[in-house]
Image (cartoon, rainbow, N blue to C red; front, side, top):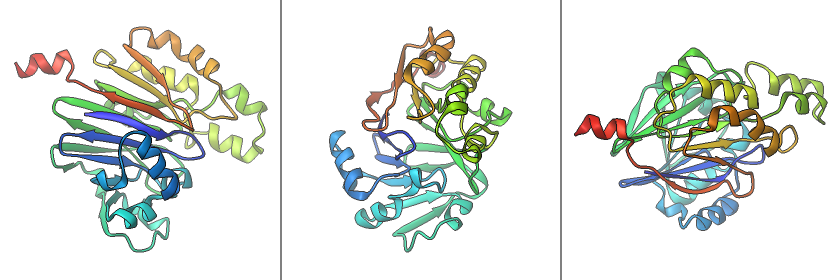
Length: 262
């Protein structure tokens, strides 16, 4: 399995996963034209996709989903709450994720995870294939015990570190938006992300990608400063950006799984 990003931030998000049986786009917060250009940068096109999975209905995640699905005849997976919160028009093929039940796309197992975010029925996801476990965890205001339990023992993790609390407090957002972003149903701060990493088992973690970094309420320097005490033993730490996301990361089964299957 391998993973890349088309872009990560408040102006658009999309993550690309590829496994031997297909490729999957998680969210599409860009126009079709922009999505196709960003896919081309990664050596892919819309016709290569197997499906689109949607985390929630906020525009930076769902903006281009329906148009891209119609352009390339792609099935779309999302929770009923996400679907009913937006008028997406006619989709080529809709699959509703009921009660956060796991499902499979060929050899890829998809585990939806309920998260605290100010959307109707938001989900984040864990993907497993060939002994590799990849976690995507952005757009949540609190790390619940359920979230913490689900994201143990990943081989790769894309994790939100959205804002620095001091920058958010003194930044340009109106008070209501500051309250929303920094609240329990908003986004994780650098410190919350660091606390989460300190509590989960990162023994198998080959890659940690820090994502959804606010361009107005955070900086790479502040994110690194907050996270460095808990990332020293992780093989590779990558900071995703809005314009370029991050390039392909190839994952291999960790030693724990290799020993278990021997």
